[in-house]
Length: 102
Length: 174
Image (cartoon, rainbow over all chains, first blue to last red; front, top):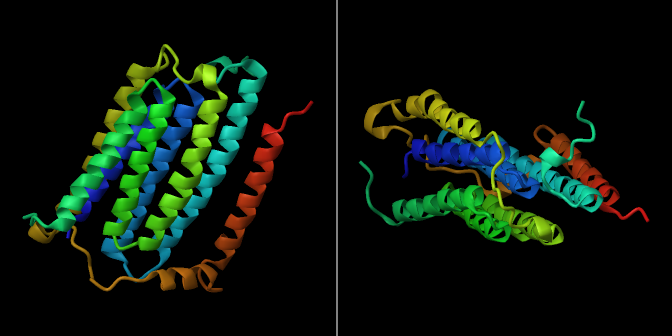
């Protein structure tokens, strides 16, 4: 089979791409996409370690399933906030939503 | 060391999907294209789940991520139409962000992946057994009183709360 480190390498690269998108993109929707990429990288790692280390213990797959739930909740609420902010300020750039800035 | 068979080939194709899609997401100006790249990346991850003998998660990945979350993102992109193709893609701290992301990648590789890779020579990173738990086991574990029934119920509660919260936040007040 494919050695485990290859999956981990792809997941690490995907996670860093997601982190870059979260830190550097200006559009809030693109930032949410970065979060999705990071969650997917985590899921690759969870399922990879499950398959190679503990294939009879369901912890890895169960955790991956819970990550799906969190991702769905995060996307729904995050996009609702983005649309609400866009309606108020005609902008989806987080830097410009600075009402609370001191 | 790496024998050439269908599985290896599939791994590299899916890895190309995952990384190419990810690269597309972080570089494209037009967010509609970005969403399509995101779908490509998510599909590659679903392929990884198949290769890792987790067929149920692969199906859920396609249904939930591509079928629901990606469509939700497309809706958000469409609803914020004037912002879909911003002139400047990145903010002022993008140089610092690149450095942080690259350093993070190096750190993950050195501290986590190298030890896994070097465990015992040629057999590095091979699975401990060919016997794998099935989807039936996952289903039983999720409703087993000694395993994950409480997190399972909490997750359903969280989803309900998130759904109501999303409706309340996005509703037009007038």
